[in-house]
Image 1 (tube, rainbow, N blue to C red):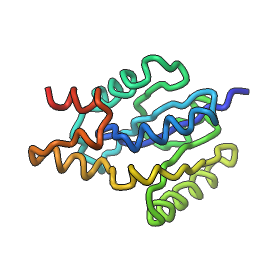
Image 2: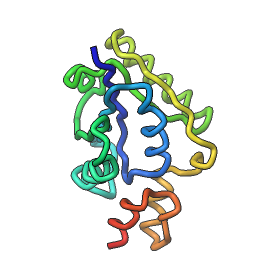
Image 3: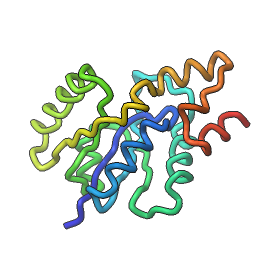
Length: 156
């Protein structure tokens, strides 16, 4: 059985913090699916297709990482792709408290899916998509928080 992991999120946009978590998780899994979740409660800045393209571009040379767009329950999507692991990045204690609540709910819905938490590198703790979007909306330079390919595509 392959160790397939889902890294769910909005990735609006993909940041260096996201890439850090993916890269550090690669030795743990055979495949990581970066799942771009559609959430009616959120109004993203970038289209799901654009976010998917960033993932594909960033990992074009690593077949172990693929992107996907999904809607609905994360555990249902895990089942559909054969994932038994959910990957979540933690920056602060408050992130853990929130993420643990979601992990507990997911475990209640499907005991075969385990959530794995990775703490972010300290240099990326201040990197949040919300802050990056605010910088972009206000005409600032968000490139210090973004992979070069993502920064380039936003500035075009």
